Image (cartoon, rainbow over all chains, first blue to last red; front, side, top):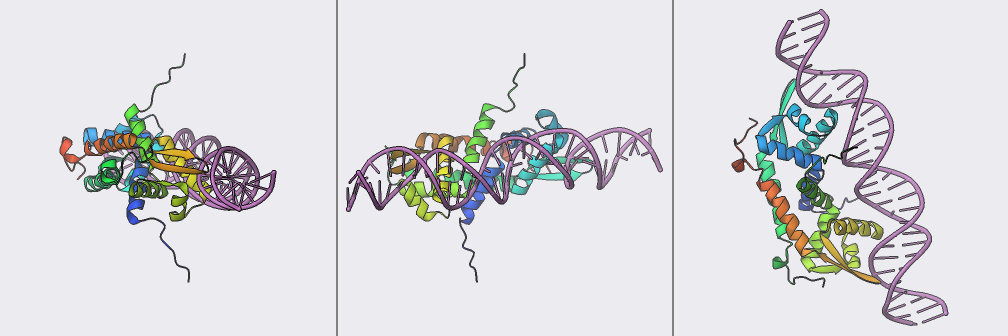
Length: 113
Length: 113
DNA sequence: AAGGTAGTTCGTTTTTTTACGAATAATTTT
DNA sequence: AAAATTATTCGTAAAAAAACGAACTACCTT
């Protein structure tokens, strides 16, 4: 029987997942838009962003799949907003990741010089 | 004359850049390793990670290009460590990005429901 | 019932990412 | 000088991401 050894920790996978969601400038811009207006329609965003409608839908899907946003679908309109809980979770996860690696928390500092 | 309109802000590009650097679990694992030991050689990491040597080099290059790590090359060995300044900068950039979007700082909260 | 509106999905192309082994470079050891 | 060690670069293949227009869905108006 083949044992599927897990390659990375759950936490590492999650960090990569959330990071990947914001690893494209247009998705960063989308989140900026959503935050500045509390929420908005696909069409509102489409006006501000230099991409085709279908491409926007794809990026929204990436953010939605990662859990960072949610869509209130109400044909023919869809209103998007930030998913507060997950967003806060991702914020803390990434913040901890970065902070935990800074010099003050390492044995030595400026190790490479 | 063609005017190259910039599509995204400098900040949005930077956020995406740093996020992209940690958008793969192996790169998250690399940073975890570097942080836990202050620094280490390519070979040390190669033992811990389930990827080929050449693939590891590639991922190290991505992290180095993003500025998150630096390499002390000293053939045939190379010692890597976290780039403290840039790392701290990235931490703050991402932290601000996320925190600035949370409900308390928006006009309304739970906008989508 | 036709037509309009707003988004999504589909099909396709192009580009980028990830991965590996083989070949290469730069020391150190024998 | 030859061989060993350690890591990078090269060449290539496979997979994933990004982009677009066309086709489609699901309501709302007329």
